[in-house]
Length: 216
Image (cartoon, rainbow, N blue to C red; front, side, top):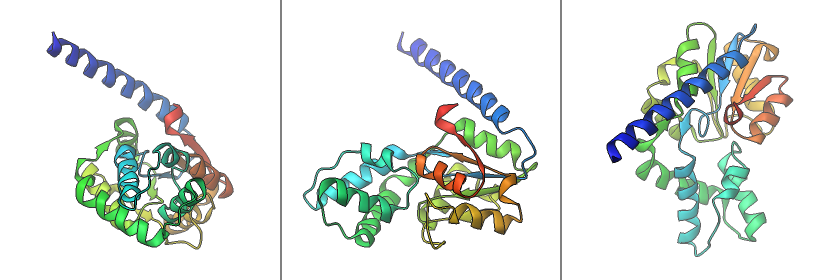
């Protein structure tokens, strides 16, 4: 009985992923020369792990925070997220120290367990020989590099822009414009794939079209 239910659930997941892949492919048709993907929550199904690492670090200092705030500010650099936590919870976390401890927890305990968001990863793989590929993330380069390696797609990514590598991070245009410049593609010919509002705002500020992968 349980085996049959497991198989049925797997079939349903596959069908849903296939439908989303087809929808994503349709939305990304057009005269685009570069696809720019966010990493966490877009290519990588790891937001739960990120939430847990934020919660763990806060708890180490005696504070209880809710994971919803991480969803709310998905795509922001970690330093900015810590700033928002300080505002919301009236805490005084040092953003640099918090980010370092959060990175250590995530990297040592969670990153190897990263699973792909299949329909987005497959979209990247199947278009890597058709358009230029970039990943633009609010995460640290160390974490993003490792995540892409775990997903098996690092070699397909031509340009990688991470937290702290531009004057401003998302929701400013800087990271996407930097990726477009390095790829040698006009911003108007780039399509962005995101799962959070800060990333969408950054794409629009850069003059790029975008797709919310969680809305397809």
